Image 1: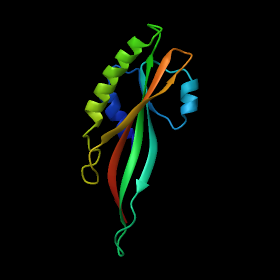
Image 2: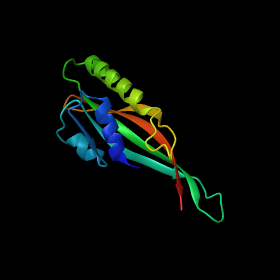
Image 3: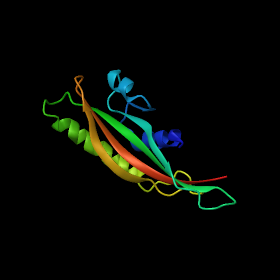
Image 4: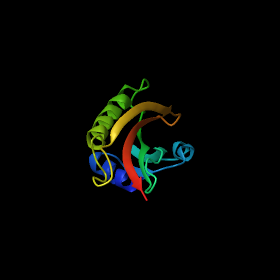
Length: 140
C-alpha cells in the first residue's frame, strides 16, 4: 500500500493540522513530542484471497490502514473541547477518504471500517484512530 498517497490526501483535506506523518511504532509516537493537532498514517493489515486461476495468479487484496488524529485536551478537564475538535477533523477526514480511489486501474473506493479512542495521555492529548479499507487486485 502506498501510504505516501494517503498522507498527501490527508494533508490536502485537513489543512489545520500542524503535521502529518507515517508511523509504524505507535509506542514511540505516543511517547514523543508532537505538534497539535497532528495525524499519523499507518498500515494495519492485508488479507488476500486464494488464487482462483491455474495459469495466471490473480488475487483480491484487502488492505487496511489507519489515520490517527491527535488533538489537545488542555482547554477543559472533561475533554469536551477536544471532542469538538476531533469531530471536525474526523468529518473532514472521512469526507476526503471515503469513496476515494487511489488507483482507478487497480482498485476500488476506500471505505471507513471503524473508529475508536486509542489514548488520553498524561500530556493532555487525545489519540483517536479511524480505520479504513481498500481493495486492490494483484496479478502475476
